[in-house]
Length: 417
Image 1: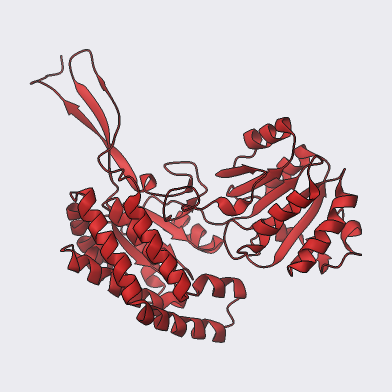
Image 2: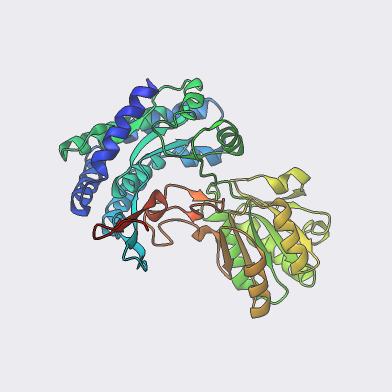
């Protein structure tokens, strides 16, 4: 089955790679319109997945990721239209030169070919990947988790109808709709057809893909994100940023998981943090250094466990620890972080510069919430993933990250001497 899907996707990718920007945008607008026109059927399918997920005991964080509401679906359709307005990278000349012998060289952006994406309880990924791949002339093979089975089936059906309406092959967007886990292992070895693989899920999925895939893998999306509160801050402003980073959407990979507080302000700042977090329902997981400053506050406080520093809460829980200085904060981030998104709150330019230069994450912020690490917020349109590795793509992956380049040489009957 997968070989047939891969062969069809590869053939579709050849046709997609030759489309004009206008043709691709016409298909994207058709997708957006049909998503809205068929919103009821997609949401009804999502309700089946939500019901099964609740019965299975899925956590609130994952339920939030799985949920599609009319507002969320219409926002996703709007994101598809936004992709139309973005510059098409395919065909762009990156640079060029003329050699001494007369050979004129260009590096030109081209599609990757076929992109494979494995994801869990994230039905929006289906549409994000489809729109970005279509804009960049790539075909896509999707494998969502069993939690999104009904939602993905309904969504892909709509996407394929829109493609066929525009005279494009429906094999440009395909989904493996069987929950059989053996198909994941088979997909990881489909290097004859799939040019790049993107896993979007937990650490176990990323580990599986890195170890077993014969296809180049882009890893990321696991966000153990930190904010360091320096000793030179405005407390009220800092608390506002912290609240946004933790509460605005706690199930997101760019939400705040560990707060590092400079010891010089801990006695004054942490009681105010307790009051602010209590008001928004956040449970604090305190280190030995932070506990004395939090235990008499209104927020619920428990002792942090060592393993908590290395994992995502994805919920209204926040690790809090006191550090001696910026060196200790940077050392903690290097030890426990996932190189996703980390921030410093400070009024010191020199401290901000040190943090930016020494924290090796895909996104580093000064006096801003980590929640900004997102393709839409970065002006990239919908994102296919957030890469935390260093080769090919890093951070939110928009259109350019779904292209590669080819060298093109122009001569006048040139031969090599």
